[in-house]
Length: 203
Ligand SMILES: CC(C)(COP(=O)(O)OP(=O)(O)OC[C@H]1O[C@@H](n2cnc3c(N)ncnc32)[C@H](O)[C@@H]1OP(=O)(O)O)[C@@H](O)C(=O)NCCC(=O)NCCS
Image 1 (cartoon, helix red, strand yellow):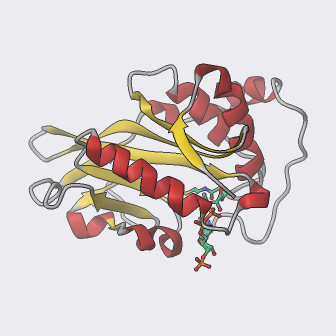
Image 2 (tube, protein in one colour):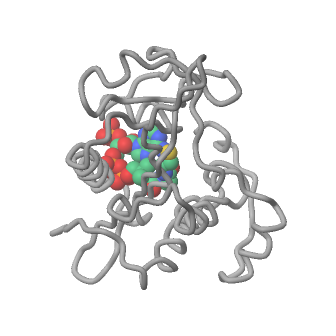
């Protein structure tokens, strides 16, 4: 299947939100909020249109990834800009065929071209280690709450970009979704039943 990559167009925002909802639904918790996160990101200063990317086969969008501006704040309160990657989605029927890897590689290449130094994300280490992501603790970076755990990972896009940076990672506020807002937003989409599954919460 021939795939091309490009920036998401404004008239594809709802379609990519829908894709995100379909792909994340019940995966990490009953239902999901990643589609609302994506919606909110696009209205905020953290939004980087050229890093709002889709992979396309013919006329079909089969994958989407977005990176936002985030920061690592050090002990002297100095802010260091980094990218936060995600949500990241591949349409279910196309998963496991390498399309996600290609989209992630394309996204990282674009980020390098744009001069960004580092990318940080929350995800499954089994997946992201293949792209060179490592536990953020190895770089002296913790979450905003001072926590570290395997799914919290960082990658230098430019060699040495994280060598002088230590501190807490602050992703944009759009990642903190309000339950009432989510309930309202859900009304714009077809109803879906939420399920508790044994694999949830593993990331
Ligand atoms: C994660 C996702 C974007 C990867 O895209 P993909 O096209 O399926 O991935 P690829 O085909 O490039 O890679 C497949 C490999 O990744 C592994 N993989 C895929 N999703 C994974 C996950 N969530 N955790 C761990 N490994 C995963 C597969 O087992 C496979 O491993 P192998 O190469 O050793 O056989 C896609 O599966 C998806 O949309 N998942 C649901 C939403 C999600 O979890 N997004 C990421 C949030 S951090």
